[in-house]
Length: 285
Image (cartoon, rainbow, N blue to C red; front, side, top):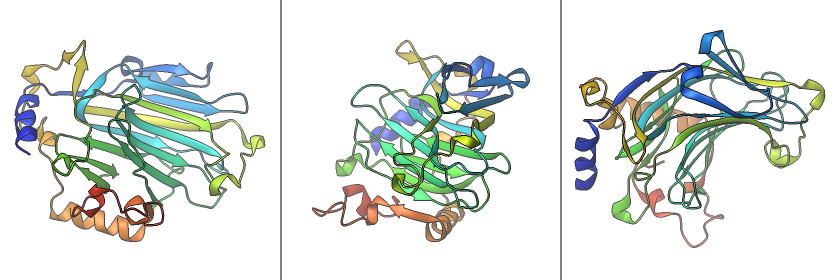
């Protein structure tokens, strides 16, 4: 991991913290008026009806960072809907770090679907139930992405980590800057019980809400970092070196024991020739 250590030292000079305003930080990219920025940029809502969903993306691109967003998901009968919130680069060999929230019938739990793509290769799905109702209030969903690992967290509790295992021949997202994207869309051909439960359009419009975006990150612009050297401090760049301490590892184990419902790393039927190499690494689940 010597190259990762050098990269961290270089990046620690170029860190910027950004407390978000949706008017300044994001562009609504589709939905023909179904996405709205409200409350002087402090709240963003996405809506879905039978004609269309909606979506937005960040103006900035990031090459490593800690990204926080609070979401309140579609309430009631959300079957068939998907609320996606993710980082992604562009192109066939893109990198991507995904949260997707798969809707369900009233009273049945949402499924939180996660995935990591590196150089165009994904198929690294892990799925979870949540330990609360994600439609009743806002909750914080975080992606920490540094040269050593990626950590998915919910309200500060880690649910998944993906380590840099380039030494084992596993590609790792480290060279392609990524934007933040989010969308609310109809996926009733697969989202709920494999497509058996369809979207009930009598419940439309469906609405998801966003607030309290925060990026402590390295911003990429015109082929180089646009972050201020003056913003570097032990506090602002701590995420660049962050790994899971023993307490966080216990929380991760608790979530994965009690709330994980699918893990590609245990799906031997899917990988009859052997599980992917990252699956045999300790604690890379």
